[in-house]
Length: 67
Image 1 (cartoon, rainbow, N blue to C red):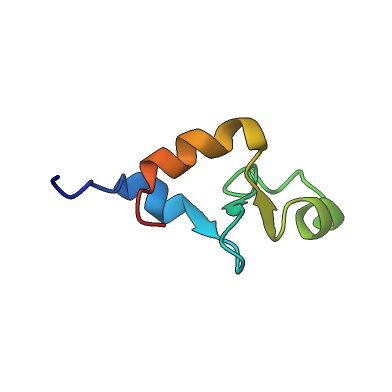
Image 2: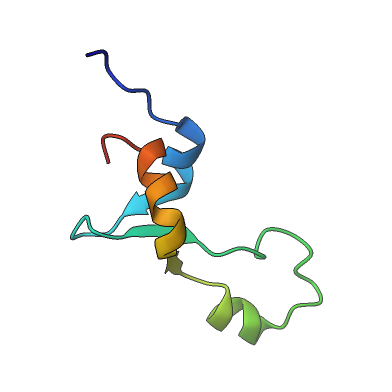
């Protein structure tokens, strides 16, 4: 059976957690147009990582066959 190719775009966007059971992602809305957003919102709500939802997890795992 041939090697499976990893979707490079997905590999750059998702990481497995330490246990390897969950997939982490970056939160949206913190790329540009940040002037009108409060520092509190940017610090509390938009910083850090979030987990990929269960409904999307299967598709992400298919894109990352060796993760």
